[in-house]
Length: 71
Image 1 (cartoon, rainbow, N blue to C red):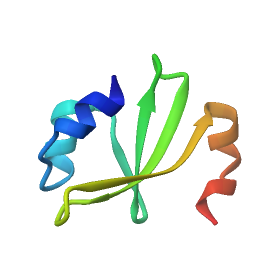
Image 2 (cartoon, one colour):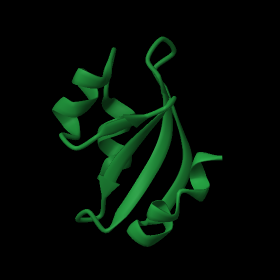
Image 3 (cartoon, helix red, strand yellow):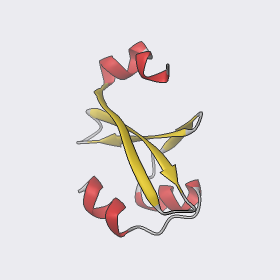
């Protein structure tokens, strides 16, 4: 579902992203999405100018909490 929504989205900023994913948050230059019933975190880089989204990590909450993805 995340992929389908994102593929057809035309986001220009975080507010647009949050219309589709209310709990999306920006951490540095990355956007963090809660997916699969909030069981996983998908970390992506969203380029609003080119309308491209690059998936960087898909983690469980435990893996996300360790913070290793921030390096």
